[in-house]
Structure formats: structure tokens, C-alpha cells
Length: 545
Ligand code: AHR
Image 1 (cartoon, protein in one colour):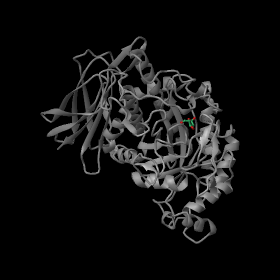
Image 2 (cartoon, rainbow, N blue to C red):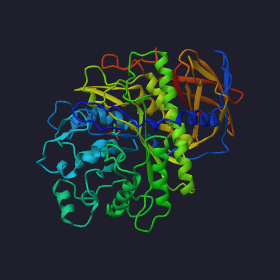
Image 3 (cartoon, protein in one colour):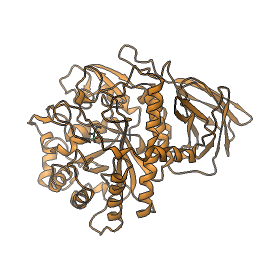
Image 4 (cartoon, rainbow, N blue to C red):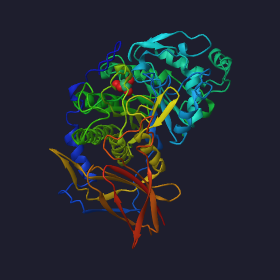
């Protein structure tokens, strides 16, 4: 990825990022969802699940968010300043906090992204903050008004955990170590006293530490070997001193930069890091390896985020299903060096990347968010959940106003996107246990694109309630479902469905509820759950026993 200078948006990605992914994706998807001959409109899909054979946990961290200093993602999207007429708590907008609280956001990755490898934390603390530049994203000024304390206040206000990305590209292990001491030391060190003087006497909790970001590209164009030596150094010296975080399960987890695709360049990256980890000494360790993958079809991102038709809908969904192949490819390499699956695969940047909205600064990565994006999000989360033994964390890019956002703002106005509604509908899956499903998905075809007509996820939550999420990819035909759940005596089933008049339907400030979930009630007959899925819809129901 070429980093962005001035107002020029990112223009290219290495070609091999997607090379083998599609083929692998479809093959591997077929292992879970069997593709057969096309179904007729009136055909029924039978889903069966056996509750006595649970799968892996669907880690709540799969529903993580990402907030980079990029465009209107942080400034305006989250931070308006205490003097703003927009209602705020200590400068953080109240409407956005309330909306995010409802998503039960498990963690927020900050401050980047490419921004992280140019961020120097000392500029974002204290009363006097320098105004700097954000050369990656539009070349605009960075006030540094939103810094360490403001971010920690924000995650606290939404009830989430901090996932900090430290600067490897243009920083030093010492700078990052000082930041962590500033944040977490309980003893009265000079840095801890400075933190107290800035309003926070007690140590902060830092749950996750990202060691760099895309250091194979915008983070310094490093070879895997060069990055590996940086990783060892940061993993050794950047310590968390919070007394409450010295023992499992409270320890800070360290996440190394991982691959950005599926071709040889990326498999070599994963091999290099994982092989070194297997042969590690006592003096360094890590807990996760990141994977970045955007749904873009090809660089530069040219697909429109609104005002598109079925051809673009089908093409984008085909492209997003490549995630299956990427996750499988890198999980297989990780299995070689870590058969016990100690290291999580952390997909900490994913989502749709479309052409910038006409008239917007191309460096701001502003795009609309349609019903297609809600479906795309469901497909990706389902993939992560089915790989839950290895994929234990993911962060959609990005939370507010940037790329596939949950929320769009325009000064004092705010609108929730279809992707927001999808994340809300999936809240019951956080930390639930996967129940493997067998189904004959059928096919939805458009031109030469063939996709599974149905994708589905089943899980059991901590209270024993069974949840089913079903996505009808076909934008034209409804789909009848008959679900048999062995081990459950189904008595009633109800939930919500998210569909829209068109695949490119969006919510705007003028029509904020054009795409919104509606209640749905399923029939239960002889213990089977029966319902009809609307075209281009995602439905989540719970089953009463
Ligand atoms: O999310 C936008 C950018 O995409 C991030 O800054 C970078 O990590 C990735 O290439």
C-alpha cells in the first residue's frame, strides 16, 4: 500500500494480496456451506444443528472497532471539544457515545492505522499541544486535542477496552516504553506523576498493544526479517506496569503486524514471524498476529458506495468472501508453528473500501454505507466465527465517518448505518459458543458470478439461549428456512430482520431510518423453526425452549 501524501488517496496494493484467495475462499466456504444446484424461488433450505456438539467460542473481540486520526473519524466523529454546542461530555460527543454503548464495543484500536507509525504520544498530553500535520490522510492539520487521556476517557464512556498501536515506523522502543509507563505505572515515577498532574492519578488499563501497523508498507516498508527484530525489541521493552494486569487473564496482549493478503509475500511474512515465535527465548513473546484485508475488488478503490446496481452488489460480495481463503491460509501456517493455537489471528482492519464520496477530500476516505454493507459485514463475521478457534479478534475499519462506518455525522447531525444495525443485531453472539450448522445453501447467480444463496451462523449464549443469524444473499428472491435443532425443544422463535428496498439503500440525515431492523416472528412446528427470509436480508432470531 502506498501511503498517502497531501490530498492524494491510496492508489495501489501489491497484486498478490488477492491472488489465491478467491479460489481458496470458495473451496473452503464449500466445506462449511455446501454449494449445489440453484434453488428455485419457492425452494426451502433446511438447516440442522446439533446442540450437543458445540464449537469454539465466538470471542466478543471479533466485534472490535477502529478509530484512526483520519478525516472526520476522530475529530467531529468522536471529539468536538468541551466548548462545542454539540452536546458532549468532556469534549466527546454524547450521541455517538450512546450509540456505541448499545453495540457493546469490546475494544477500540487507536490511533491508527498508518497514523500510528507517525504518532508521537507526548504531543497529545498536557495543556499546551503542538499543531502538527497528518500527511497520510489529506495533509490536514492535527490539533492533538484528542490524545491519550481523551482516548482513555472515550473508551471508558462507551464501556470498552483500549487497543493501542505503538509507533514502530518512526518511533523507538524507548518512546513506546515511556508511553506505557506513563499510562500504567502505579509507583510515583516521574512519568506516573506527570499522568497524575494531567488528571489521572491511578494507572490505566491497556488491554491490547499493537506493535506497529502495516510495517510492510505505510509503517516503514520493512522486510519481514527487519520487522521481526523490531518486534522482539518492542515486545521485550514495552511493558505494562499496572498492578492489576500482571496475571492472566488480565495481562496486556501484544499483537504483532501480520500479513496484508494471501500471496507468497504474505505467506512468507506469516512464516517468518510464526517460525521465530516458535523458537523464541524467554525474553520476548506475543499473543496475536494481525491480518489486514479490505473488500475493494482492485486498487485504487473505485466501486461506488451508493447509486450502484446488482452487478456491483454481486461483485463486492464475491470479493468479500475471499476473507475465508485468507483466514484459512494464514491459520494453516500458524497451525504449523503453534498447534495449540496460543497466538490469535487478529483481523484488525477489514471492511469495504469504496471510492471517496464526490466532493469529499479523497484523503478522508468518506463513503456511504448501504444494505450491501450490512450483508458484507454479516458474511465476514460469520467467517471469523467459524474460525473462532484461531480468529479471536477483529476490528472493522472504521468506527465513525471513515470507510465502512457504524455512524456518520455532519456537524451536530448523526445517522446510524446499516452496518451499525447489523452489529447491534449480532450483539448476542458476543462470547456465545458456536453451534456448527449443516445446510445446503443453494446458489445465487448474477452473470458469471455464483455465490451461496444463504449464509448462516448458530450459537448458544451463556444463558443457554440459541441464536440463529441467516443472510439471504439473493437480492431478488425470498428464501424459506426450516431449522432443526437437535437437543433443543423449540417452542417459539423471534427476532429482527434487516432488509431494504434496494441493494444500495442507505440511511441519510434526511431519511435516517430507511434501512432499520424490523421485528420478525418465526413459526414453530413439530419442533422445527420455519420462516421466510426477505431478499437481500440478514435475520437474527432467538429460539425459546
Ligand atoms: O484504514 C485505513 C488505512 O488502511 C489504515 O491507516 C492502514 O493501516 C490501512 O492500509
